[in-house]
Image (tube, helix red, strand yellow):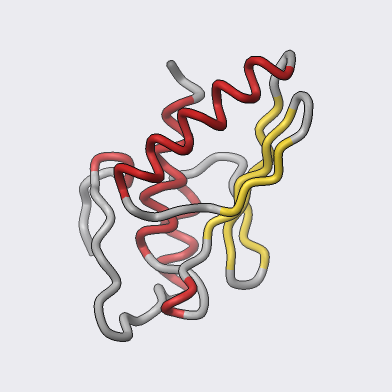
Length: 111
């Protein structure tokens, strides 16, 4: 496993039938992602904001990251919150890409 921080990595294309990450990797990755939780075959976090404008700015920044990494989350958007859910359909669960993107999204909140 790589020692480079998740947010410094780039997503890799899921060619063929890549394997999902194992339980030990999931626990290790989640330890780097405060507030992110595993729910079955996905990881998610709820981000809260002061108003709709801040929420939409975050959603747009998330879309930019997703497009750049070519790995896209499910989003649930409300007035002052956004729930982000990552999973990798091609592996039927979680891949390293899910955690890389979660780490990059986490960095957006530090700006």
